[in-house]
Image (cartoon, rainbow, N blue to C red):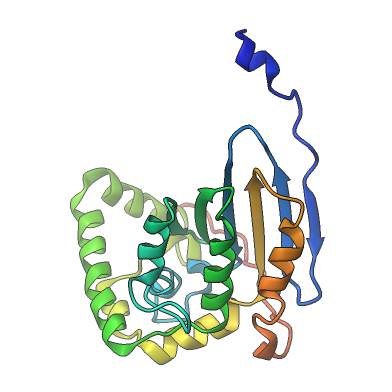
Length: 241
């Protein structure tokens, strides 16, 4: 073991996990090995929650979360991320959708501003919705043309027949045609709310990190109303055949 490795702490401090008054679960993981902070905002909404006949809704909304909100114009989120020397990305699964940012420790609060704003006031411009629909159609075609991806989709359909886990996360071209701005807004309003989300902050956090996150999200989703009910999924069926 070299000297640098020997100097690393054997165990990181315990994570701080608290639920805020508005329902947001906040988890802080302190790690001072590098002057970096990563935020990961996880919504309990994935392809299992896609409305009937509108498969790919959760994934479509993931794309639209980068297409403008009340404070950030189209392209501004990615531009600001690059300007600050950071990175961002997102992914959608069957059960959840995750968004992350990584910044230097002296500027990570920008992630809080972006996430809180697009939770509360996503733009969903009609022209951007149509443009992104074409992008996703191309993405679907790429999966279908790549042998291993195509095989994975077919195996999922066979392994989980008549179950959400057997449906493609991206949906189909036909289903995408039935998704518009109002449908995306309804999905966002239903699932993109503090009491359906977990925010993880990890890295070289300052002493005020928890309070900063709590302030950033204190008004987010306040108008959503009643508590969200998300039925449990039935157990997947046996393999077809």
